[in-house]
Image (cartoon, rainbow, N blue to C red; front, side):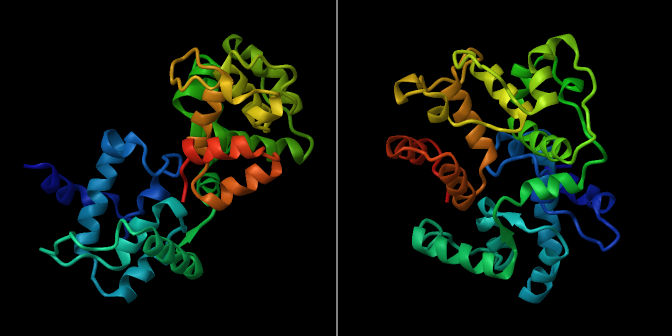
Amino acid sequence: MDWKESCRSRLREHLDLRGDLAPPWERFPDYERHTIGWRMGAGEDWMGLWGVFLEQLARDPETRIAYLRRHPPAPVSWADAVHEVLYPAKQGDDDDGDDDDDPAAAAQRRSALLAQGLIASDVAFTTWLGQQRGVRWPWEHHDTPEEAARYDTRELWFWSRQVAALRGSGGWAPPAVPGGWRACASALESGDAGPVDPRQGLLTLARLLCAGDVKAPWQLGLALADFADSYDDDMGYVDAFRLWGMSAFDDAHQLRRYLEATRAPSDWEAWIADQLPIE
């Protein structure tokens, strides 16, 4: 049995009571659009199931828009996939000559999908939050904050926002943190990361996330020369900030709000445009 046949044979067990398979942005909201997670493990499996489900779904726009409306809007970064759900290519269609690579056409499609409410800005967090049953503490899965910031950046970001809201509601206190997370204890309890060492990029990012306030490099007095273009575990904060940005922002409007709130200088805006090319 090949992989596609395996997906067909297992599809029914994953359908909800309406006979739907959740779209990938609902099933895994903590996966950014282009993560390798869609090409391996559970993410790859879900994409295979979804492909089979869409093959069996009636092709008329009414059926397909009804399917999409039964589920949370997709992040803007999924606009291409949502468009393909609505307007599936006919079998045997040749992709050559289409406007998939035309920025103006892509922008037009995004605008139409936004107007229909089928995609939305900064929506993945809302989807993720609605699936939570209480707070999942990151030290239950990662021995150190650096490890969590390095390998579960997006989920740590969502958790940070969840905890910040709880802290702001009053009468809330976090549990005691294990020894490996002691450097983050004060930030988590108070919402203030305190003095940080930008040379320890991943730890600085983790502490800021625990405080619920990710500072931009320019807010910490860092310069473009501090960027080393590194993904190593000993990366500095500018590189860790890029790692976070790649996980945190699903659309240009969301990113623009952050840049305006942090008063990004023009040279840093140019760096952001180069390092985080988000539509």
